[in-house]
Image (cartoon, rainbow, N blue to C red):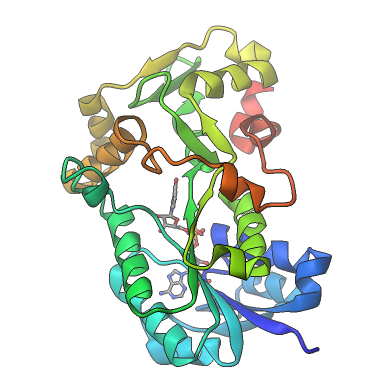
Length: 307
Ligand SMILES: NC(=O)c1ccc[n+]([C@@H]2O[C@H](COP(=O)([O-])OP(=O)(O)OC[C@H]3O[C@@H](n4cnc5c(N)ncnc54)[C@H](OP(=O)(O)O)[C@@H]3O)[C@@H](O)[C@H]2O)c1
């Protein structure tokens, strides 16, 4: 039987790149599927690296539906991600027109709806949820992958050496906030590969992509364990909301984005990043170990000075 084609969007990025690696690196998946990796620039090094691994690399732009249709021609499945609603709908429309049999959409919750309008500014979540709703309306055979809070957000940002030369760890949330931590660049593919292989089991469902819920205190404990000298005197600091917005302002981010990011953080402890959903079923789909925070920080370049 000839292999079924999976078209992977954002293939040179964290999520898409991980999906390509997982499928091509897995005997069961690569005997069933071939990978068509999409980039806007097939000549760049990261695109050439995908070709060297065995992917067919094609050019398409999410803003151009015809180029997407071309990239989806003959494909069985599509992995799609995109922030804005419009290109997201392009992906759904092109998938429907090309009769795709399994769209895995990288989604997030509709926070405005979940919180009854209390957190109405988390547009980068709501826009992905709007595309999920559109995909459901079109009755495309689809499943929904919801990436957790990226581990990569923390090293060098929340956890770093301060101006006084000492390590510090600050986040705008309580010390016991349940953060669904996720190593996107390593683990997206573990989930998405499983979703393509277990199509019947996941169609119409949401899969929550995270290693586990972990609190700021546990994040710090792992840092102290891996880097005992650097972690010796570090205490967790809860950043006041206005101080958090002030930091974003000093980075040049406009007020609406500061508020959006703050509400994103409030979501984690006021309503739950996934609205309180458990991770057990999602994790049961995956047949290889997920990256723990402790593993993630070992040898991380942002912690080179902590050795
Ligand atoms: N940070 C977090 O905690 C977190 C948590 C959950 C979800 N997310 C979401 O994750 C998403 C980012 O995903 P990622 O980490 O995989 O991003 P990424 O590493 O920045 O990759 C972006 C990819 O998108 C492709 N791309 C961008 N514009 C394109 C266009 N017009 N047409 C075709 N391809 C295009 C780029 O490919 P080429 O340049 O090669 O074309 C690149 O491969 C964001 O939407 C964010 O909201 C983040």
